[in-house]
Length: 301
Image 1 (cartoon, one colour):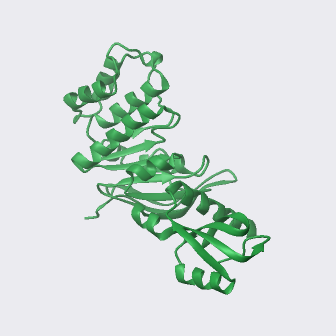
Image 2 (cartoon, rainbow, N blue to C red):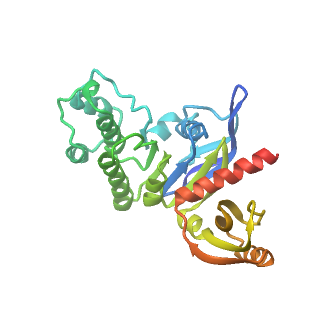
Image 3 (tube, rainbow, N blue to C red):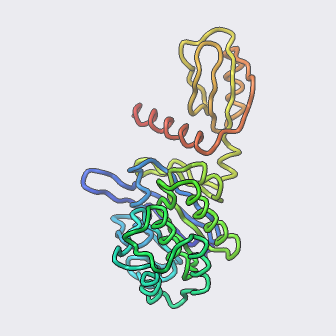
């Protein structure tokens, strides 16, 4: 039996002339927190909609718990807690009515856990959805996604536009769910510091294509920042194997690199350049470097 909750093979999707997804292959292991990152329009929401069965693949396959989410919506959706980016909740309902309405769809709804989350998220039963702030809407949506204790959470930009305190609530809920109960979380986000904080694995999506998918620790270890000094001022940075991006001028430059350390050191030595320092870039810096490198490659093509 597969240990991957989600398995996607060669998934492609086009909307008119726009290629939203192009031969995406992705596996999400059981019990992991999987962060999906990319700029707006990269295809993150489209990918999540295929996982939820809201869109049918034009080519390729999607399996969730070994099932086709389009062919078997009850078998898949009953095991997923979903928070959409739009936080689309019925505005005329109170929190209490929202609880009862949602509970009817999930036999495994845990009222004790729901109440615990309601207290933690500081929501009042008599509040109407129409009166909730953006932060309260996010908390309410996350509560509904968690309260039936689904084995898989699919969260689309769960903390987008929220204040730091609300974001901390959401992240704490994710961490607690996964650590305490071994559930699986797939979430998309543009907040790279938060992705780095909670994720076990990450994938970078750019214009419908996966630039990278790997365990987070491997991503961080395989990238490094070098500060280098040339004997003579450089009008522009030379093309070097493994160098994704560079900043600086004259003699001193900072470069973010992707592995290939020996080749890079040899090339720098040939150019009479000295490595002054090596530091670890953040996931956000790696993401920016990867995006710029992909943009240069696309421009050349």
